[in-house]
Length: 165
Image (tube, rainbow, N blue to C red; front, side, top):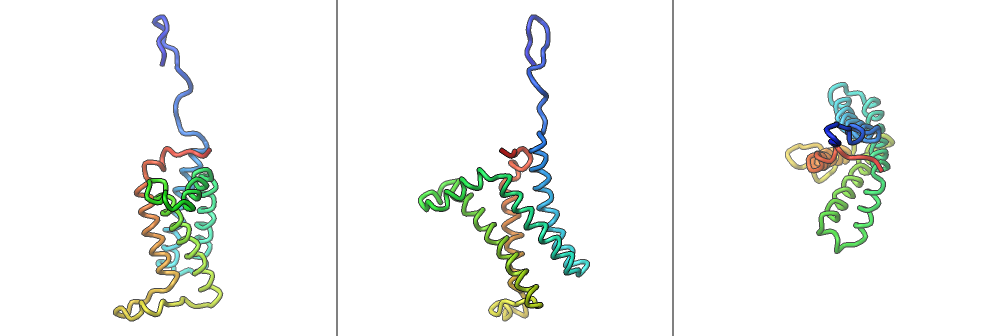
C-alpha cells in the first residue's frame, strides 16, 4: 500500500500463487502420491497391474517435473561436465539430481526386465544375508525412496514457492 495525501492506494495486485506455481505444486504432490501409490498397490492389494500403471504415471510425472524446471535442469546438467564444480553447491545439486535420474531409470528398467522375464530377479550376493531376498527392482526402488526423501527434505522450502519459467 502506498499512502498519498492521506489516501490509501493499493500498490499492485494482491500477492498469491500463480497458475504455474499451482501446477508445479500439483506435480510435486502427484509425484509423491504416485510413488507411494505404486508401493501400496503392490504391498496391500498385490495388484501387479495397478502397480505398473501407477509406476508408469510416476515416471511420466518425473518427465513433467524435469520439463517444468528445464532451465534449472540444463544448468545443473552443465555443471556435471565440469568436475571442478562438483564441490560447489550447484555441483552437489547436479550430482544429486543425476543420481535421482539414474535411480528412476534403473527402477523403470528393472521393472520392464522383470515384466518381460516374468520373474522378480534376485541379486545373488545379497540373498546370502540371512535369507534376505532383494530383487534388482526392489533394491532400486528402496534406493529411489531414500534419495527421493532426501531430495524432498532438503528442498522442502522451495516446493511451496517455486515457479515455472
